Image (cartoon, rainbow, N blue to C red; front, side):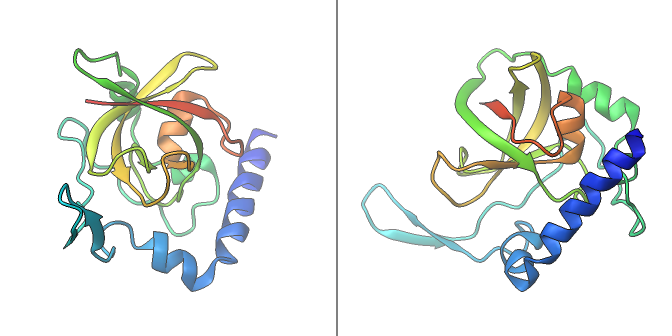
Length: 179
């Protein structure tokens, strides 16, 4: 029964994403590596066309491999090891971290491995922590900037949502901290 539930979530996600066509892949599917330079307001009010930062893996967490193309369940898509999950779950509040705010999280691309949060709460890539206040669990993540107002929602990796024990098909409220 549990596999049927996860399979249904994955199939639903795949169906929803398949309807996005080129718009999805142009805006989100290429990740930060394919992002075009964004105009950024400088302190002087001028615009600067620098490139966005490239996502980098956490130094202490090895990178999880991409899931197989035949992946259909949450377990098959989440290629992180139990050691990686345990390390990410040990995300205790760090001295000097700052609270960025709350965001509504939705499941990001399940084919992108690792622990990450794509959010408009940051303007540059950083290390951080996400807390799920409903159960008090938290997880270390790479914070990846996306365009949008600070009140817009965020996309969360499958691995991070599983460690948080947050609903994969829900829209959980998450508290975001940066190191």
